[in-house]
Amino acid sequence: MSSGVTQFNTHSRWMERWLKEHDHDERSAERVHQHQVEVEKVAASVRSFHERGDKFRIFHGSTNSTRKSALGRDPSKVVDTSRLNHVLHVDASSEMPYALVQPNVPMDKLVEETLKHGLVPPVVMEFPGITVGGGYAGTSGESSSFRHGFFDRTLDQVEMVLANGEIVTCSEHERPDLFHGAAGAVGTLGVTTLVKLRLRRATKFVETTYYPVTGGMKEAMAKIQTMADPKGDLDYVDGIMFSKDKGAVITGRLTDSPSAGVPVQRFSGAADPWFYLHVQARITNHEGPTSDAVPLPDYLFRYDRGGFWVGAAPFTYFPGLPFNDFTRWWLDDFLHTRMLYNALHGSGQSERMIVQDLALPYANAEEFVNYTDDRLGIYPLWLCPLKQSPWPTMHPHQNEFEPDGKTLKPMLNIGLWGLAPTTHEGYVQANRDIERKLHELGGMKWLYAQTYYPEEEFWQDFDKEWYDALREKYHATKLPTVYEKVKAHDESGGKAGSEKKSWAQTVIDIWPFSGLYGLKKAIDSGDYLRARESSWKDWVPRE
Figure 1 (cartoon, one colour):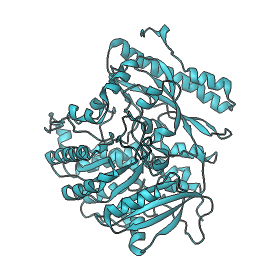
Figure 2 (tube, helix red, strand yellow):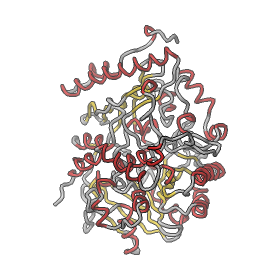
Figure 3 (cartoon, rainbow, N blue to C red):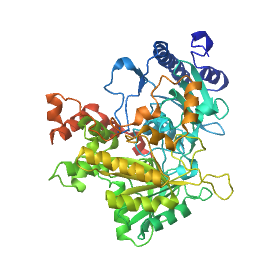
Figure 4 (cartoon, rainbow, N blue to C red):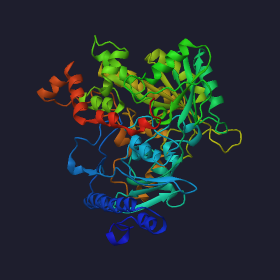
């Protein structure tokens, strides 16, 4: 197709049809009109890059990746989509409720908007700052993904600006190859500008039950596979291994009426426990399963405070700072995930942490955990059962089927998050060793973190011919490839970031200045105010 503007859409026909065919209030109509204006600006910017033959990256306004983002890059090579950050409409009256959501809406704001209508997304990423667009362009498997699949599997329609500036819509019935191909492709097939997201009825509570594990991964996986049955009545399943032998499998059931005698437990207030510590206390103090009635949004964002358990790392970075109930209460503003990410990027200390999500066949997961136990000794580990996406896909996958020959076997997500080896060389080698072991065991990693694979090895996990054909068909060859976006600066193991630094940067890199500078950047972001002002905390008022 020619790149001339007369040959393709330069405005959103989906939104024009929607305005004509659906009932909507004045506020929704105004937001849709403003959306069209903003998308046309994005399309014009993209089109100018295409006409010049230049590559560009996308600035979203925030990141939950441990990779360097477009922040700080040459603004002349960035398309700014940061204003696309609104929920345009929630339709609660349809037989299949849905929301029209722009890509930069974070999970907490999405949940707040849908809860006003008594609705909630089927898959909600546990970190409040992860955006809808990030969930589609990345890989987001959560504790409801054994039933619903990755976040993108809950979308019915996506509006995109292709890399030639054309505005298109894709779905299961319209450009389905793009609809599925762009999921997990980290923005390398076009710029997402709007999604239609399915919703389900919200309840007041999630009755959350903690099952102790004392027999290691073998017992944990057996429990998870039994409980993560899509035909069963559970809505959420995940697990935590606190050591090689001990852990917990955690289930959740949506309910307005918790079982008699089950106490209400919250995780959103500064004085509330961190979720993983609460689970650890429960399984330590009880031999059998115990339950809590957790307000729905408290459950959805239960890992926000403490960033699962990575929020314990600053207490190690600053020796002498005790890790206890008082200090976690006192420093609560700084220990939510948005602030932790800001501090990590601001400090330049991302190499202090191994932060990797990994998906493996159940048959090989125990061997992988035994390997990481010997190689790194990182605990806790997060366990999350996953329903696979149809192949081909840029999501982690394995081509193994159930006995029916049609259903893909589920996989197990292992969250490996903890302190890294102290040298750059040790950090790179640890990541390469993880990648090699994963490949050996038929596993794959999430691409939000830096990747150290050589390019040929990287593409062994994906159908490159399929991916390249999509890029050619949808004019995306001038966008960075997936590999270009996710690779570390030196995949060969040399000294990444060895370029000459300014004296100021050299000083900032010295302990404790890097940590203090990261803390300053986090405070400057003002993101701690978002956590303080979150209205979702009042879904079930405190007594």
